[in-house]
Image 1 (spheres, helix red, strand yellow):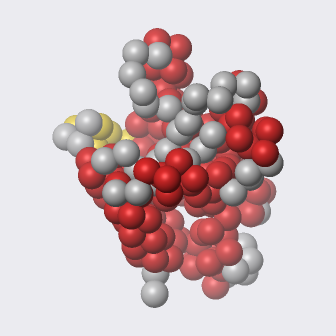
Image 2 (image 1 turned 180 degrees about the vertical axis):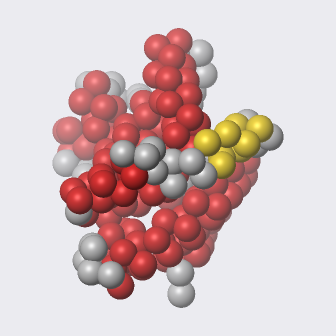
Length: 206
C-alpha cells in the first residue's frame, strides 16, 4: 500500500482521537519547553499527527495527497534506476525529516516558554511539496487554489510569504514550520544523491 495513504490514515485517526481527548492532544503536541526540560523528543514527530480542527486536518491531508503520490512514485523510479536507495526509506526520511526540520527553530527560540505549543503536519507537507518542485520546477501549482503558476515561482512566493507572515505574527499559524519544512524538502533530494542537481539545472536549459 502507498505510504502516502498510510500516513494520511494514521494522521486522520490520531487527529480524530485528539479532538475528543485533550490529554492525548497535549501529550503529542510540540512543546519545546517539555522537550528541553523533560527530554520528550517524541514530540518532534508526534505533533505532525495532531491537528486543531477538521479544516486544518483536511487542508493538510489534501495537499499531502496531491503531492505525496507523485513524490513517492518519483522516488520509486529513481530507486529502480539505482539513483537513490530504498524508495520507501527515502519517502519516510522526507516526511519525518520535514517534521524535524520544521521544529528546529521553535525548539531553540521557544525552549523557555512553558505555554507555547505547535501542532500539524504542515512542515512535513511543505517538505513534500518542495521536493516535488525540485523534480518538476515548471509543473503547475494552483496559487490560492485558483491560479496555475510554475512550481518554482510558487516556491519563491511561498518562502517570501511565510517569512513575511512570521515577522508579522498576527495569527496562530506557525509560519516558521512551513518555511523550514519547505527548505528541507527542496534540499532533500541532494541529500539522497547530490548528482540530482544536474536534473534540476537541465529543467532550466543548463
